[in-house]
Structures are given as C-alpha cells and as structure tokens.
Image 1 (cartoon, rainbow, N blue to C red):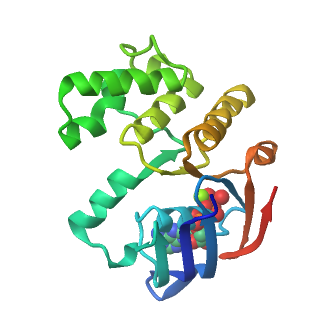
Image 2 (tube, rainbow, N blue to C red):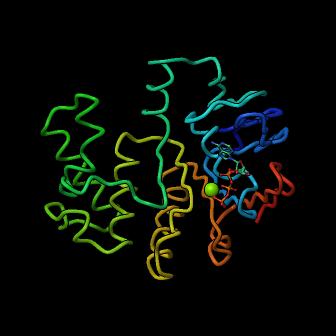
Length: 229
Ligand SMILES: Nc1ncnc2c1ncn2[C@@H]1O[C@H](COP(=O)(O)OP(=O)(O)OP(=O)(O)O)[C@@H](O)[C@H]1O
Ligand SMILES: [Mg+2]
C-alpha cells in the first residue's frame, strides 16, 4: 500500500503570549503513508509535540491545512471533530494518563462505555486487547500496582480499543527503562506490521529509531529531513 494517511500543507503554528509571538511551526509540508511506523526526532522546542497535537486535532494550525484519510480536519468542528478524533486516532503520552481509581480492565473499557457498547461485547474486546499487549491476567490490578512498562501497555490498550487506524505517541518511552521501552516499541512495530496501523512516535531515544520505517527530523519549527529506512 502506498496511500497517503496524513498530509500537511504549509502548516504554521504561532503562539501569542502577550506581545510575544512564538513560531512553533514554520510552514511544515509532510506526507505520511498509511501502514508505516514513523519516528519524529529533534531538539527540545523544535515543534515535535506541536506537530503531533495538530495532526491529532488537539490543536489547530494558525495557517495551512491537515488532511487525514483525505479529510480536511480543519473543516470539522464540535461533535464532528470529537467523533473523528475518537474513532480514527489513538493517543499515547509519556505520563500514561491512566485513572488510578479504576482497575486495568475499567481503564481500557472506558472508551467503549462512552461509546455505548454493551457490556458483554466490551468484555470480549478488552480481553482481546489485553492479550494482544501481553498484559492478560492483570485486569483487576490498579495502574499503580503495575510497572511503568505495564502501565504504558494499559494506556496503549486504551488508545487502541476503538480500533483507530492512526496512533500518535508523544515520548511514550520517556519514563521507561530500556527493557520496557523495547516492549513498547515492539508493540508499535507489531501494530504496523501485523495490524495495518499507522504509528507516529516522538522520541528522544535514538536507540529506538531503528524500528521505524521513516524518521522525520525537526529543527526550529520545520521538518529538515525525512529519511526512509
Ligand atoms: N502553549 C504555548 N504557548 C506559547 N509557546 C508555546 C506553547 N506550546 C509550545 N510553545 C513553544 O513552541 C515551541 C515548540 O514546542 P513543542 O512543545 O512543540 O516542542 P518539542 O519539540 O515537543 O519539545 P520537547 O522535546 O521539549 O518536548 C517551543 O519553543 C515552545 O516554547
Ligand atoms: Mg514535546
């Protein structure tokens, strides 16, 4: 397959704080193919998180357009945008963002509850997802009773439960030791190679970029290099 999944056309992001303007993105053009694993690297402040948030429709560009599955997401608003995000994208962050008063099962189940999926179906879907991520048997634990790597796998399970085709991960291994970082990157690799997903991962860990198909280098709000591996 050689189909565009994400296309950015002349995307600018300017933050204004008082009279000061911050150019976080300066005319980014980018093309991400479906079913690829892309790593985004670059110095702190180069615009990696801004780029990911704009692709994930968590933030809007100041100028330019973002097309996902050929849909101009800048033209979606309110409920349409929220639905698009919920059904097409999965987010994974450095800090896991799990709810500690819920069990592992309940954390992963949550997006399905919100969607109104019946309980029997929810149980089956969650069970399959925990198996895929190698954390079956942990359903009744609470997130704080798990290792960092296990917590991040729960967060990935929750991000995937609505079967999004695009997974956006911002430094997902930032809080993990090398063994757990490897587990997470192996999961992403498998999601792309065996399950047809597209993964975009921001990382500071140069050890991990060898698992990606494409490496995007950012500097000063621009993509300065796109390398296929
Ligand atoms: N809400 C905001 N208001 C003002 N400036 C911002 C805001 N968010 C980000 N910036 C600025 O935009 C630039 C890009 O930030 P961004 O978070 O995208 O960098 P990053 O590449 O993800 O860095 P890091 O590796 O440290 O996470 C930085 O100079 C930052 O200070
Ligand atoms: Mg960042």
